Amino acid sequence: MKDIVGGDCELMAMIKADAYGHGAVETAKALLNEDCNRFGVGEIREAVLLRDAGIKAEIFIMLGFEPELTPLIFDYNLTPVVFDIQTIKDIANEAELRGVEIGCHVKVDTGMNRLGFSVDQVKDVVELLGELNGVQFKGLLSHFPEADVTGSASSLEAIDKFSKLSNELRTNYNITCHLANSGGVLNFPEALFDMGRAGISLYGYHPAGNSAKQPHGDRTLIPAMSCKTKVIQLKRVEAGAGISYGHTYRPNQEETLAVLPIGYEDGFSRSLSNKGEVLIRGKRAPVRGRICMNLCMVDISHIEDVKVGDEVVLLGSQGEECITADEIAEKAGTISYEILCMFGHSNNKIYID
Ligand SMILES: *Cc1c(COP(=O)(O)O)cnc(C)c1O
Image 1 (cartoon, rainbow, N blue to C red):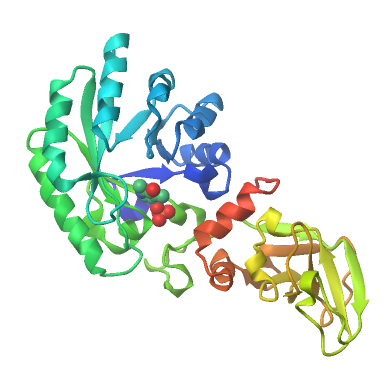
Image 2: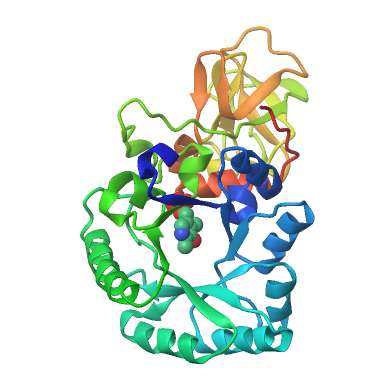
Protein backbone atom coordinates (compact mmCIF):
# COMPACT_ATOMS: atom_id res chain seq x y z
CA MET A 1 0.00 0.00 0.00
CA LYS A 2 2.94 2.30 0.69
CA ASP A 3 4.28 1.63 -2.78
CA ILE A 4 0.92 2.38 -4.32
CA VAL A 5 0.46 5.73 -2.58
CA GLY A 6 4.05 6.66 -3.41
CA GLY A 7 6.52 8.91 -1.65
CA ASP A 8 4.48 12.12 -1.59
CA CYS A 9 1.49 10.64 0.14
CA GLU A 10 1.34 9.30 3.66
CA LEU A 11 -0.63 6.35 4.95
CA MET A 12 -2.72 6.29 8.07
CA ALA A 13 -3.35 2.75 9.29
CA MET A 14 -6.92 2.20 10.41
CA ILE A 15 -6.66 0.02 13.49
CA LYS A 16 -10.14 0.63 14.85
CA ALA A 17 -12.19 -2.34 16.04
CA ASP A 18 -9.09 -3.85 17.62
CA ALA A 19 -7.41 -3.66 14.20
CA TYR A 20 -10.31 -5.40 12.49
CA GLY A 21 -9.99 -8.19 15.04
CA HIS A 22 -6.22 -8.62 14.68
CA GLY A 23 -5.31 -6.91 17.96
CA ALA A 24 -4.64 -3.17 17.86
CA VAL A 25 -1.48 -3.10 19.97
CA GLU A 26 0.32 -5.89 18.10
CA THR A 27 -0.83 -4.49 14.76
CA ALA A 28 0.36 -1.00 15.66
CA LYS A 29 3.76 -2.39 16.67
CA ALA A 30 4.07 -4.34 13.42
CA LEU A 31 3.11 -1.27 11.39
CA LEU A 32 5.47 1.00 13.33
CA ASN A 33 8.23 -1.34 12.17
CA GLU A 34 7.13 -0.48 8.63
CA ASP A 35 7.47 3.23 9.40
CA CYS A 36 3.76 3.83 9.66
CA ASN A 37 3.24 6.42 12.36
CA ARG A 38 -0.34 7.56 12.00
CA PHE A 39 -3.15 5.44 13.32
CA GLY A 40 -6.92 5.76 13.24
CA VAL A 41 -9.28 4.40 15.88
CA GLY A 42 -12.94 4.96 16.59
CA GLU A 43 -13.06 5.83 20.27
CA ILE A 44 -10.81 7.34 22.92
CA ARG A 45 -10.86 4.05 24.83
CA GLU A 46 -9.03 2.35 21.96
CA ALA A 47 -6.39 5.08 21.86
CA VAL A 48 -5.82 4.86 25.62
CA LEU A 49 -5.04 1.14 25.26
CA LEU A 50 -2.48 1.96 22.58
CA ARG A 51 -0.85 4.73 24.63
CA ASP A 52 -0.75 2.48 27.70
CA ALA A 53 1.05 -0.09 25.57
CA GLY A 54 3.70 2.51 24.73
CA ILE A 55 2.55 3.51 21.23
CA LYS A 56 3.73 7.09 20.69
CA ALA A 57 2.62 7.71 17.11
CA GLU A 58 -0.18 10.11 16.17
CA ILE A 59 -3.61 8.61 16.91
CA PHE A 60 -6.78 9.98 15.32
CA ILE A 61 -10.14 9.65 17.08
CA MET A 62 -12.59 9.20 14.23
CA LEU A 63 -15.92 9.00 16.04
CA GLY A 64 -15.85 11.94 18.41
CA PHE A 65 -16.36 11.63 22.15
CA GLU A 66 -18.65 12.70 24.92
CA PRO A 67 -17.96 16.21 26.25
CA GLU A 68 -16.82 15.00 29.67
CA LEU A 69 -14.06 12.96 28.02
CA THR A 70 -12.47 16.02 26.38
CA PRO A 71 -9.58 16.14 28.92
CA LEU A 72 -8.47 12.68 27.79
CA ILE A 73 -7.77 14.02 24.30
CA PHE A 74 -5.11 16.20 25.92
CA ASP A 75 -3.91 13.77 28.58
CA TYR A 76 -3.22 11.17 25.90
CA ASN A 77 -2.10 13.56 23.16
CA LEU A 78 -4.72 12.46 20.63
CA THR A 79 -5.84 14.05 17.37
CA PRO A 80 -9.58 14.66 17.23
CA VAL A 81 -11.58 14.42 14.03
CA VAL A 82 -14.34 17.01 14.46
CA PHE A 83 -17.79 17.04 12.90
CA ASP A 84 -19.80 19.29 15.21
CA ILE A 85 -19.44 22.80 16.56
CA GLN A 86 -19.89 21.93 20.22
CA THR A 87 -16.94 19.54 20.18
CA ILE A 88 -14.77 22.22 18.63
CA LYS A 89 -15.76 24.64 21.40
CA ASP A 90 -15.16 22.01 24.10
CA ILE A 91 -11.71 21.29 22.72
CA ALA A 92 -10.90 25.00 22.50
CA ASN A 93 -12.01 25.57 26.12
CA GLU A 94 -9.92 22.73 27.40
CA ALA A 95 -6.92 23.90 25.37
CA GLU A 96 -7.21 27.40 26.80
CA LEU A 97 -7.54 26.07 30.34
CA ARG A 98 -4.34 24.14 29.86
CA GLY A 99 -2.60 26.88 27.93
CA VAL A 100 -1.84 24.59 25.01
CA GLU A 101 -2.69 24.33 21.32
CA ILE A 102 -4.28 21.34 19.67
CA GLY A 103 -4.66 20.46 16.01
CA CYS A 104 -7.85 18.95 14.71
CA HIS A 105 -9.05 17.50 11.43
CA VAL A 106 -12.42 18.57 10.06
CA LYS A 107 -14.64 15.90 8.61
CA VAL A 108 -16.81 16.82 5.65
CA ASP A 109 -19.57 14.71 4.12
CA THR A 110 -19.13 14.39 0.36
CA GLY A 111 -21.92 11.91 -0.27
CA MET A 112 -21.66 9.12 2.29
CA ASN A 113 -24.43 10.76 4.30
CA ARG A 114 -22.84 9.61 7.52
CA LEU A 115 -20.59 11.64 9.82
CA GLY A 116 -19.36 15.06 8.85
CA PHE A 117 -20.19 18.70 8.23
CA SER A 118 -21.89 19.45 4.94
CA VAL A 119 -19.66 20.99 2.28
CA ASP A 120 -21.48 24.31 2.75
CA GLN A 121 -20.76 24.39 6.48
CA VAL A 122 -17.02 23.93 6.20
CA LYS A 123 -16.11 27.56 5.56
CA ASP A 124 -17.91 28.69 8.73
CA VAL A 125 -16.30 25.90 10.71
CA VAL A 126 -12.86 26.89 9.52
CA GLU A 127 -13.60 30.50 10.39
CA LEU A 128 -14.64 29.46 13.87
CA LEU A 129 -11.43 27.47 14.28
CA GLY A 130 -9.57 30.63 13.32
CA GLU A 131 -11.40 32.71 15.94
CA LEU A 132 -10.99 30.29 18.83
CA ASN A 133 -7.76 30.17 20.77
CA GLY A 134 -6.16 26.82 21.37
CA VAL A 135 -7.45 24.94 18.34
CA GLN A 136 -5.76 24.73 14.97
CA PHE A 137 -7.17 23.62 11.64
CA LYS A 138 -4.73 20.88 10.68
CA GLY A 139 -6.59 18.68 8.28
CA LEU A 140 -9.62 18.05 6.11
CA LEU A 141 -11.06 14.61 5.51
CA SER A 142 -13.98 12.85 3.96
CA HIS A 143 -15.00 9.25 3.35
CA PHE A 144 -16.09 7.29 0.25
CA PRO A 145 -19.33 5.32 0.18
CA GLU A 146 -18.35 3.16 -2.79
CA ALA A 147 -14.65 3.31 -3.55
CA ASP A 148 -14.44 -0.48 -3.72
CA VAL A 149 -16.26 -0.21 -7.06
CA THR A 150 -13.93 0.84 -9.89
CA GLY A 151 -15.13 3.99 -11.61
CA SER A 152 -18.17 4.44 -9.35
CA ALA A 153 -19.97 7.73 -9.98
CA SER A 154 -20.33 8.46 -6.25
CA SER A 155 -16.56 8.24 -5.88
CA LEU A 156 -15.89 10.59 -8.77
CA GLU A 157 -18.39 13.00 -7.26
CA ALA A 158 -16.75 12.80 -3.83
CA ILE A 159 -13.33 13.39 -5.38
CA ASP A 160 -14.67 16.39 -7.26
CA LYS A 161 -16.28 17.97 -4.19
CA PHE A 162 -13.28 17.24 -2.00
CA SER A 163 -10.80 18.60 -4.56
CA LYS A 164 -12.65 21.88 -4.87
CA LEU A 165 -12.96 22.34 -1.15
CA SER A 166 -9.40 21.34 -0.34
CA ASN A 167 -7.99 23.55 -3.11
CA GLU A 168 -9.87 26.55 -1.75
CA LEU A 169 -8.78 25.92 1.82
CA ARG A 170 -5.18 25.14 0.98
CA THR A 171 -4.64 28.68 -0.27
CA ASN A 172 -4.97 29.90 3.32
CA TYR A 173 -4.15 26.91 5.48
CA ASN A 174 -1.41 24.36 5.74
CA ILE A 175 -3.62 21.29 6.02
CA THR A 176 -3.35 17.57 5.46
CA CYS A 177 -6.17 16.45 3.15
CA HIS A 178 -7.27 12.83 3.14
CA LEU A 179 -10.11 11.00 1.49
CA ALA A 180 -9.07 7.53 0.35
CA ASN A 181 -9.81 4.31 2.22
CA SER A 182 -8.36 1.06 0.82
CA GLY A 183 -10.76 1.16 -2.12
CA GLY A 184 -9.81 4.76 -2.80
CA VAL A 185 -6.10 3.98 -2.73
CA LEU A 186 -6.48 0.91 -4.94
CA ASN A 187 -9.04 2.20 -7.43
CA PHE A 188 -8.77 6.00 -7.54
CA PRO A 189 -5.22 7.36 -7.76
CA GLU A 190 -6.66 10.89 -8.03
CA ALA A 191 -8.15 10.46 -4.54
CA LEU A 192 -4.86 10.25 -2.69
CA PHE A 193 -4.29 13.92 -1.79
CA ASP A 194 -1.84 14.03 1.17
CA MET A 195 -2.70 10.77 2.88
CA GLY A 196 -4.55 7.49 2.44
CA ARG A 197 -6.40 5.76 5.28
CA ALA A 198 -5.94 2.06 4.73
CA GLY A 199 -7.80 -0.54 6.72
CA ILE A 200 -8.85 -3.84 5.18
CA SER A 201 -5.99 -3.94 2.67
CA LEU A 202 -3.45 -3.95 5.52
CA TYR A 203 -5.05 -7.13 6.79
CA GLY A 204 -4.73 -8.74 3.36
CA TYR A 205 -8.16 -8.34 1.82
CA HIS A 206 -9.46 -6.32 -1.09
CA PRO A 207 -12.44 -4.16 -0.12
CA ALA A 208 -14.46 -5.48 -3.07
CA GLY A 209 -14.16 -9.05 -1.82
CA ASN A 210 -13.73 -12.14 -3.94
CA SER A 211 -14.88 -10.47 -7.11
CA ALA A 212 -11.81 -8.22 -7.11
CA LYS A 213 -8.88 -9.17 -9.28
CA GLN A 214 -5.46 -8.47 -7.82
CA PRO A 215 -5.38 -4.79 -8.57
CA HIS A 216 -1.80 -3.79 -9.07
CA GLY A 217 0.25 -6.10 -11.21
CA ASP A 218 2.18 -8.58 -9.16
CA ARG A 219 1.38 -6.93 -5.85
CA THR A 220 -0.76 -9.30 -3.87
CA LEU A 221 -2.69 -8.77 -0.68
CA ILE A 222 -1.90 -11.60 1.69
CA PRO A 223 -4.36 -12.31 4.51
CA ALA A 224 -2.81 -12.00 7.95
CA MET A 225 -5.33 -13.90 10.05
CA SER A 226 -6.09 -17.56 10.30
CA CYS A 227 -8.41 -19.29 12.76
CA LYS A 228 -7.91 -22.80 14.00
CA THR A 229 -9.47 -25.27 16.38
CA LYS A 230 -9.23 -29.00 17.04
CA VAL A 231 -11.48 -32.03 16.76
CA ILE A 232 -12.80 -32.94 20.22
CA GLN A 233 -14.98 -35.94 19.36
CA LEU A 234 -15.76 -38.24 16.44
CA LYS A 235 -19.06 -39.93 15.89
CA ARG A 236 -20.81 -42.20 13.48
CA VAL A 237 -24.43 -41.27 12.70
CA GLU A 238 -27.02 -43.35 10.88
CA ALA A 239 -28.95 -42.36 7.80
CA GLY A 240 -31.90 -40.20 8.83
CA ALA A 241 -30.43 -39.18 12.21
CA GLY A 242 -31.17 -35.55 13.10
CA ILE A 243 -28.06 -33.48 13.71
CA SER A 244 -27.78 -30.56 16.18
CA TYR A 245 -30.53 -28.17 17.38
CA GLY A 246 -33.72 -28.38 15.36
CA HIS A 247 -32.45 -31.48 13.53
CA THR A 248 -32.09 -29.35 10.41
CA TYR A 249 -29.78 -31.89 8.80
CA ARG A 250 -30.42 -35.60 8.31
CA PRO A 251 -27.87 -37.60 6.31
CA ASN A 252 -29.08 -39.84 3.47
CA GLN A 253 -26.54 -42.43 4.44
CA GLU A 254 -24.29 -43.16 7.37
CA GLU A 255 -21.87 -40.32 8.07
CA THR A 256 -18.87 -39.71 10.29
CA LEU A 257 -18.98 -36.37 12.06
CA ALA A 258 -16.26 -34.46 13.85
CA VAL A 259 -17.41 -32.35 16.78
CA LEU A 260 -15.59 -29.01 17.02
CA PRO A 261 -15.48 -26.73 20.09
CA ILE A 262 -16.33 -23.64 18.10
CA GLY A 263 -19.60 -21.86 17.50
CA TYR A 264 -21.15 -18.47 17.02
CA GLU A 265 -19.74 -17.28 20.32
CA ASP A 266 -16.31 -17.76 18.75
CA GLY A 267 -17.17 -15.90 15.57
CA PHE A 268 -18.32 -18.92 13.55
CA SER A 269 -21.64 -17.35 12.61
CA ARG A 270 -24.84 -19.32 13.03
CA SER A 271 -25.75 -18.19 9.51
CA LEU A 272 -23.13 -20.70 8.30
CA SER A 273 -25.25 -23.58 9.61
CA ASN A 274 -25.42 -26.28 6.89
CA LYS A 275 -23.35 -23.94 4.66
CA GLY A 276 -19.89 -23.37 6.09
CA GLU A 277 -16.85 -25.54 5.51
CA VAL A 278 -13.65 -26.17 7.46
CA LEU A 279 -10.35 -27.83 6.57
CA ILE A 280 -9.25 -31.09 8.15
CA ARG A 281 -6.23 -33.05 6.87
CA GLY A 282 -6.11 -30.68 3.90
CA LYS A 283 -9.68 -31.44 2.82
CA ARG A 284 -12.94 -29.53 3.03
CA ALA A 285 -15.47 -30.75 5.58
CA PRO A 286 -18.99 -29.27 5.41
CA VAL A 287 -20.89 -28.08 8.48
CA ARG A 288 -23.82 -30.35 9.33
CA GLY A 289 -26.82 -28.95 11.13
CA ARG A 290 -26.97 -25.75 13.11
CA ILE A 291 -23.89 -24.11 14.52
CA CYS A 292 -24.37 -23.92 18.31
CA MET A 293 -23.05 -21.31 20.73
CA ASN A 294 -19.69 -23.02 21.13
CA LEU A 295 -19.93 -26.29 19.26
CA CYS A 296 -20.58 -27.48 15.74
CA MET A 297 -20.39 -30.67 13.69
CA VAL A 298 -18.73 -31.26 10.33
CA ASP A 299 -18.90 -34.22 7.97
CA ILE A 300 -15.58 -36.06 7.63
CA SER A 301 -16.91 -39.25 6.01
CA HIS A 302 -14.68 -38.65 2.96
CA ILE A 303 -11.53 -37.87 4.95
CA GLU A 304 -9.29 -40.67 6.13
CA ASP A 305 -7.61 -41.05 9.48
CA VAL A 306 -9.18 -38.11 11.27
CA LYS A 307 -8.42 -38.27 14.98
CA VAL A 308 -9.44 -36.38 18.09
CA GLY A 309 -6.94 -33.55 18.45
CA ASP A 310 -6.50 -33.00 14.70
CA GLU A 311 -6.08 -29.39 13.64
CA VAL A 312 -9.14 -27.81 12.03
CA VAL A 313 -8.81 -24.63 9.97
CA LEU A 314 -11.85 -22.36 9.82
CA LEU A 315 -10.02 -19.48 8.17
CA GLY A 316 -6.71 -19.78 6.39
CA SER A 317 -4.91 -22.58 4.60
CA GLN A 318 -4.10 -26.20 5.28
CA GLY A 319 -2.29 -28.35 2.73
CA GLU A 320 -3.37 -27.19 -0.71
CA GLU A 321 -6.71 -25.82 0.43
CA CYS A 322 -7.54 -22.34 1.64
CA ILE A 323 -10.64 -20.72 3.11
CA THR A 324 -10.62 -16.93 2.91
CA ALA A 325 -12.71 -14.44 4.84
CA ASP A 326 -14.25 -13.48 1.49
CA GLU A 327 -15.45 -17.03 0.96
CA ILE A 328 -16.94 -17.21 4.45
CA ALA A 329 -18.46 -13.75 4.04
CA GLU A 330 -20.21 -14.71 0.83
CA LYS A 331 -21.85 -17.69 2.53
CA ALA A 332 -22.76 -15.69 5.62
CA GLY A 333 -24.15 -12.78 3.63
CA THR A 334 -21.59 -10.26 4.82
CA ILE A 335 -18.09 -8.89 4.02
CA SER A 336 -14.58 -9.98 5.00
CA TYR A 337 -14.39 -7.08 7.51
CA GLU A 338 -17.09 -8.59 9.70
CA ILE A 339 -15.69 -12.11 9.52
CA LEU A 340 -12.26 -10.86 10.66
CA CYS A 341 -13.81 -8.85 13.49
CA MET A 342 -15.88 -11.79 14.68
CA PHE A 343 -13.05 -14.33 14.71
CA GLY A 344 -10.59 -11.83 16.09
CA HIS A 345 -12.74 -10.46 18.87
CA SER A 346 -13.64 -13.75 20.42
CA ASN A 347 -10.55 -15.91 20.28
CA ASN A 348 -7.13 -16.27 21.80
CA LYS A 349 -4.53 -14.78 19.47
CA ILE A 350 -1.06 -16.07 18.67
CA TYR A 351 1.26 -13.81 16.67
CA ILE A 352 3.70 -15.34 14.21
CA ASP A 353 6.34 -13.25 12.46
C1 LIG B 1 -12.62 2.26 8.46
C2 LIG B 1 -12.30 3.51 7.77
C3 LIG B 1 -11.30 3.54 6.77
C4 LIG B 1 -10.64 2.30 6.24
O1 LIG B 1 -11.50 1.63 5.34
P1 LIG B 1 -11.04 0.30 4.60
O2 LIG B 1 -12.11 0.03 3.63
O3 LIG B 1 -10.95 -0.77 5.64
O4 LIG B 1 -9.72 0.57 3.99
C5 LIG B 1 -10.95 4.78 6.26
N1 LIG B 1 -11.55 5.92 6.70
C6 LIG B 1 -12.52 5.91 7.62
C7 LIG B 1 -13.15 7.19 8.04
C8 LIG B 1 -12.94 4.72 8.18
O5 LIG B 1 -13.91 4.71 9.09
